[in-house]
Image (cartoon, rainbow, N blue to C red):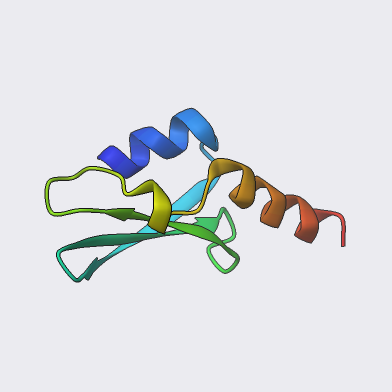
Length: 71
């Protein structure tokens, strides 16, 4: 839920996610709407808090999406 709210606020609704346990938290892989292009990832600790230094920023994810769109 935390990842979905974060992405809706910062990236819009044209993304899909896959959640995978990682260490003492979770890695949320963020895909474009086509479900093949990996835009980035978010890392959440065991308490559900976003770990910014391990996560892709919204700008990084947008840049990946725009680079693909622009060829």
